[in-house]
Image 1: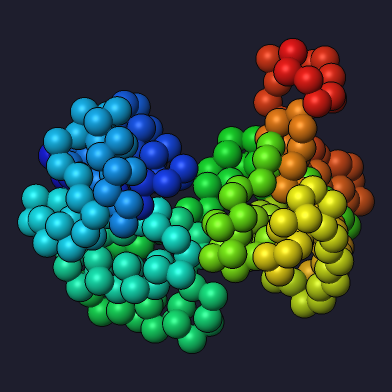
Image 2 (image 1 turned 45 degrees about the horizontal axis):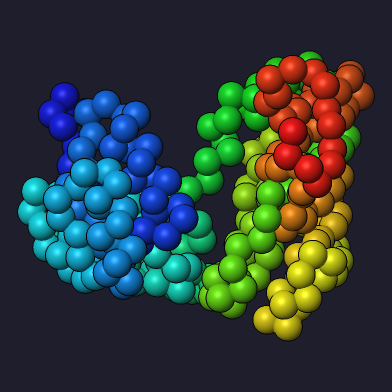
Length: 272
């Protein structure tokens, strides 16, 4: 890779777009955020102002048409991802896009073909594969520390649910949230799922149910290598973000807990 500065543009300045802008702008060397855009101009303007970025717009073409921009970070709503990826690829931009690419498998395949034909790079935001704790769990499975893998368990709970308007366009809990956990169990086991059973409920916010979604789920899995899996999801853990992984086998068990400032755990609705 060249040592020159990589110039990026951010499409979508909602919660995750603001986070990517902040991290790239403040903490990643060799990268410069040239411009941000959002269909809500005030959102783009606010994000740009906070980070000292001069260029902001409500039109993504301002980013795709900017020849100084090498890569785009796509943080727009899920229903726009496939189109944005294809347009960015046609513009010769390398691409990082939040998950998922699309709700439709055929559209995903078409989008990936467009990227391949354009000869650009594409990465989808499955960030947990890069978490050092989860990587260590994967290594324990690969190097045989846990023996023959019997079971994998993933606990995934968000601190609070997103706005209902977001949920209506997200594809639902399994597509929007559990997708990370489906990726994680495939990563940990190195195997594909051949059987799945899922149950869900509305226990956090009745408005989520009224929008046609669930906010709590339990998923049982069986993998091609014979191992079993379990995923549990909740849109709200009052004590904060909760991400844990466990792999159990014939030779032992490995687990990754939440990173804590100490080993004491207090679980309440109150902020300590």
